[in-house]
Image 1: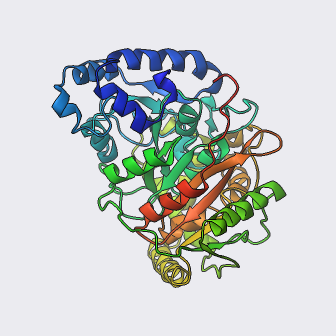
Image 2 (image 1 turned 90 degrees about the vertical axis):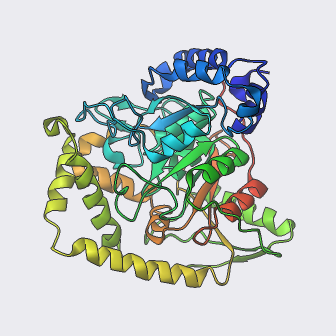
Amino acid sequence: MDLRDVGVVELVRRLRTGETLVAEHLADVLERIRQRDGQLNAFSAFNPEAMAQAQALDWLPFPQRDELPLFGVPVAIKEELNVAGMVTTFGGRANSTPATQDSDVVARLRRAGAVIVGKTNMPEFGQTPFTEGEWGATRNPYDPRLSPGGSSGGSAVAVAAKMVPLAIGGDAGGSIRIPAAMTGIVGIKPSRGLVNTTPFPHLWHDLGSYGPLAREVADVRLVIDLITSEPSARRPPQPLRVGWTLGSPVPGIKPDRVIGQAVADAAQRLAMQGCEVSHGSIKWAETPATFVVQYLRGVHDEVMTMDHPERLERRSRQAAYYARRLPQGALEWSKASISRIEAAMRQVFTDIDVLLTPVTPTLPQPIRAIHRKGFVGANLASSRAIAYTSYWNLAGLPAASVPVGLSPTGLPLAVQIIGPWGAESLVLEVASRIHHPIAPPAYS
């Protein structure tokens, strides 16, 4: 068996025995990246210390290996998180100073025995659900003419193409869930406040969180328990109450028929397992301005940390410009609006335990140079893609994307699972019940 093809849990079990050295496995991983990433463009930079870290793990006594839940696992990190000694580019060209400390999530992974392979591509500041920019574009392993979604597209492709078994992304409007859905893997946005963003004060204020992407639900569950401040232990109630809807918080948005059918089929699968399943609609409590204010202020805050503002993409300069012209008190108003959304969703989850929806309204779309459209054009192109995901960033609830099969055209199908605050374990339990591992890309 090729260890590059197995998931995190199985890989750790095999590496701990010493039958395969961590350094040898890392060399194999880097060779596969060399073979595959030229076409896919998932990675932006490689960690020059990775091999030394792998060799150090090989010297550990066997009892100490058992204390490291990610012993020897190669991990890819999205460009908006710090890896000490590497430049945090945020997907652009305006930064040049290497980070002096790891982000808290990265430090936790290292302490658990992970090897940080490198950084992955994203659109500048994660502004769109398409992974492209002046640096080029990341491509979908199921069809390189298509986008893998975004903004954690590089992380998703690195996992889906079996270059690494685990990656970390960030999600402030769907940026983990959308590329997970587009590339046929599992990804979760944790509950608001459970994942530390240090050394950054926030990820787009109340909207964003870092989270894992992997090919197996069990792997995502393992990592969630490592990176969250309060590991979830909520057990599924009996019987489990499942709601599902194809309604979108964005008026006029409906899913393609094949996607709507995938959600309905997943609900039926849970009903056959004894769950109480109901189909209905949600009374949404959002105004679009609530999201836009925090998005603009979040991009502005990141823009202000750049070494070379003259190198920013046009859409980023425009976003910062509009952020500076928001009315006084706009951010405070947005936070108050989010409190109302939280209260409304707590009421929804008194009647159901989890909710199923589409992740995106469409299958993967052709790659386009969205960054050339500027701020307005880029956001118009993005609004449809995030129609089913961004609301749960406002609500601050855990939301996962899980693959459930392939479309008649051979592209991944996925379902979104949302639960109440702090119910990551419940969301992932449901994910495990409907997860349908799909055929890997042809070159695998």
